[in-house]
Image (cartoon, each protein chain N blue to C red):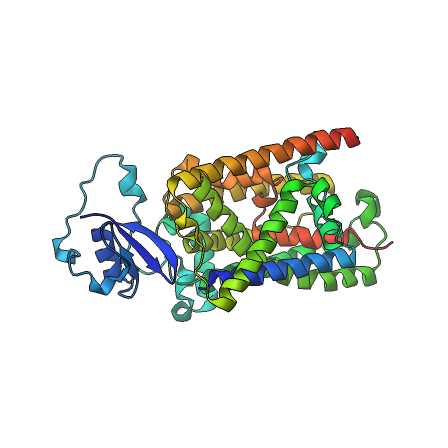
Length: 302
Length: 129
């Protein structure tokens, strides 16, 4: 039986075997109202009209071949939705947030392999936005504290002899930009990675999947802004360098597992924008927002 | 989700944020690649390109970074398409509509544009120096 193309709300979900579709209907990954098409059909039809999908008890599990990457890369649709933030209404905001951070940091492979690939943009966006904004704000406030406690001689010229009034003024400018940039960057950067996947691979991946993986990964990596990095250029270059390596590693894992790419494909998707855009894309959303805040300080009048 | 509404809103928001940034005279971080190598990265001149675009100096904007200029033009064109698609309920364009050959040609064209832009920047920055 040929592969089925699925579509929901004019968004292509990808190609799936009849067995995967039947399993998806059973687990809730797919809805009876989702549209499907296969070769030979004239037009799209709702899944509910397909009467020849295998029933769950007719499906034969695939033979386990030793070292089979296909088996390893098949998402395991069992257990609660992943990560824990997907069920914050039941688990509570704080416990779900803490568990999600732990899942992403300590077990990213399993977290993104089992990540819920559909279900809307709201939850991952909220996780990324709130975590990123709070961490970026703390990072900017930390920079302001450094400016007041460090000896003036170790600071770059543009940061020396700044009044508290000027610092607070720049903070007032930075916060609205953090709020706006936090909305734009998840969609823009995940869109960029989605285009990279389309350009570099033949995978029929969903934008929503890339968006979810990006948000959960970068929202967690925004915690790196909590590190007390002083506004000394040499230190900041080292910090951005190691933060970039961390971001590349974790983003590669997230893209690889969620989009079911090979490691080299995922590395290309993540690294190529960095090379093209001067490492800007290596910065996670929270780090980008912190840099926005830091660069705003460069215009402080003496 | 209506992607045309989403991207139209994001493009408008980004445009407003960029205009506010330029109006306030805020600066951006220096280019790390340029600091380390002395060569321009593929997006060097991009900020000055956007500033010139917002001030209506299109020729100068293109000269600073043709790729960023074309990217901004593409974003503006997409915003117009999205607005028309929403208002007049037009059929939506999707990447999955591209055939395999069209996708392959697109990859080659994009790679060629990126390479040509970077070569242009290296040559023009070296002449300016």
